[in-house]
Length: 98
Image 1: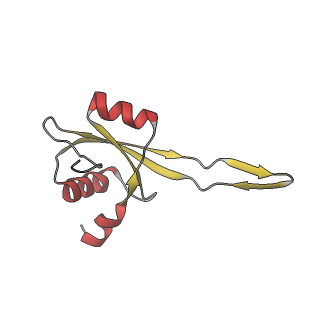
Image 2 (image 1 turned 60 degrees about the horizontal axis):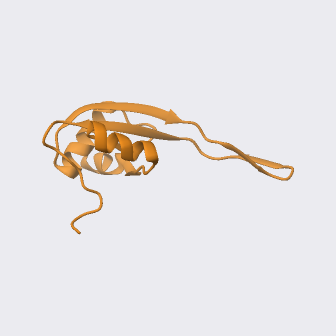
Image 3 (image 1 turned 120 degrees about the vertical axis):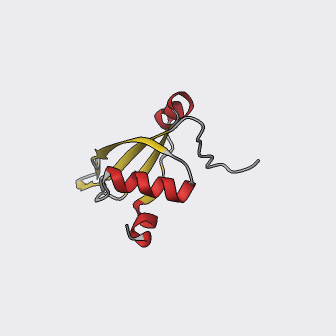
């Protein structure tokens, strides 16, 4: 796999109440990823970038929301989200050392 492609697959960590809950309870991390990335590429990217072992990857496409201001209607862009389950003994700390 191309190293430049793997480095660009993960866009950002996704922070929400549900993402925090699954991180604590199920050893899962929630990430925003490229819309054209598949589960295998996401697993490889996480393993190489964070030096952890991945047990499974679940993906979903988050559709964009319709928004409007007065008569002007628009639409936010959709994006892809991945829930990555880590093997026991592995963890990713986005906050870093405190």
